[in-house]
Amino acid sequence: MHWTGNPFVDAGLAALAAVLRVSSLEDIEPEDLEKASAKLQSVLLSDQALGIGVERAFVSGPLSKLFPNSEIVNPAPFLVEVGGKRRDVRALLSTNPVIPEWQEVLCKAKERLRESLKLDLHRAQICLTQEGKAICMFCGRFTPEESTTFIRKDKMPLLGGIVNFYPAFSWGVQICGLCAFALRFLPFSVMRAGGRLWILHTHSLPVAARIAEQYGWHHCNAAIAQNKALDFYGSWETVGEDSTVAYVLCELLDTFPHELSTVYREPLPTTAYVFSNDNQGGYIRAVQIPNDFLVFLAKLQVHSFTAFRRFWRELLFIPENLPKQEWKERASFVQEVAHRMMQKEDLIKRCLDNETWKLAGGWFGHRLYLQEVRKMSVEKLSILERLGMMLAETGDSKKRINELKTAHYRDLYGIFLNYVREGFLKSEEFYALFPPNDDTSCSEARDIVLAVVYEWQRCREKGETFQPLGNIPVLTSDTTVQRVQDIGTRLLSQLSNPSKWIGQLRTAKTAEGVRRVYLLAVQQGALSFADFVFLVPFDNQHRLWLLRDYLMAFLFDRARDVLPQEEEV
Image (cartoon, rainbow, N blue to C red; front, side, top):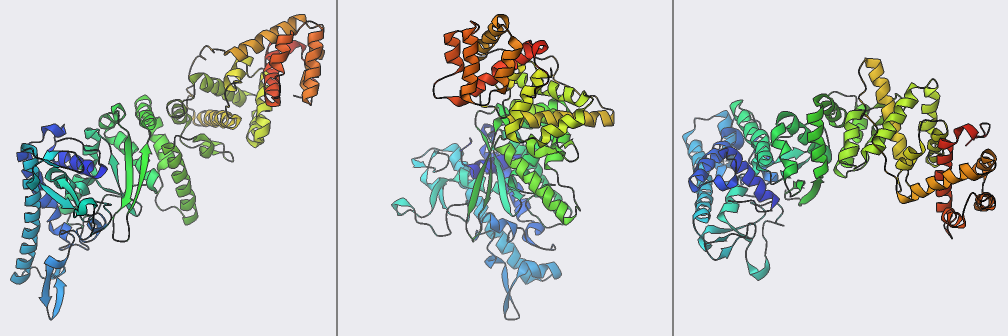
């Protein structure tokens, strides 16, 4: 027995492995299938599943969304003639369980279902012990013809309809008995996400089996023990499809950290399939779960359980009994954040509350998310973190933070350049944040600085210790930055009046004005022709201004004592 690649069959295999408590699919023997079949019957043929003595029937309600018009959903075998009308014997037995005729109808209906399951069991056992010439459409197994069966939408989600005609005029889809048997166990891997169903498709058996055990078998057996109606598990404290997937991953990691840690070792991706299979039309949506996101969650939980819980609860949890308007706002926030997680997009901007100066999720979690998911270098993070701490500790921090958070995105570059002049940033750090060969967003850098400031203020108010990354790593310069630094060094050493020349370069408003200032340096012998061509490339004004800014940053950093202080950057 092995994984097939079909998400529904694989989910059924996971539920089968969970009830047998095996560590590998290869460990399942033909006699084990009989034990699993008995467990399946004990749940699906229980009074609570059939709707006897409880408010609704699982087999004709929730299960009909998964296997519409199947033999276990079909009410016809349970009908009995009462007073000239056909009534469902399950509803009648809920009020009067001692009528022998009704009991006999119920027993016959159950026996019919048992025979159907027994036939699937027999085919599955043949598949495990014999080979043949028939090929299964799902697993590719070569199996005897008598061990195959034809299935449709009533036994396999999203096959298109109850009556289907496929190529070669075959009736339904021909699959092996083992795949058909596995599909019987699919309900125990299915969960609810809003008004739809969903499964987690992974080839990590510890995770897939744990989901089936916790949210399938255990959930159903608990309902039977309490004499409650069965249903697919959906008691999440969140809302939305992506939100539910992310919430379940956090809940699993919180409860079973060892099992979930095996997911990111798998070479194949983990995918959540949100679907519906009722008679009103099929629907499916694949939610690709980035492996980087799984690694992030696992590392966050290992590094700091408190930070992990805070990230999970503040970004994905929706409290009960919220006022209607607050609930809508919170639900919108949670769904947007979860969608961004699945798309590996920026989170900080959406998690900042600039009115209350708060960061939802905590800086520790966001910092690790930037490293593991967004792939931001530790050098940039360290620089922005140190900048945020310096701004938070200045005497006019409130004024500076208000300037930063209200600035238009076009003005952010100038603000960061001014930080170099004021000594908050070094020129090398400015180059690392906004290198010439990388289109790094100033807006994201602004959001990260604000996140650090808000978290630093929170720690101070609560008496907690802010934990920075540590020592700033050694920065490596690229060739463009290195050349700008060499040009700046020569200018400072060879210009007759560096202060006046820097003032002219800083106040130049046009490309012609910048070129004129550079020509003055060439005239004084402080700038070579090759350097002039490098700083003023043909037909590329954007690069002219970009290189001018990097040169200014270097001059601000290295020649702060000769800068004219009365002029604003």
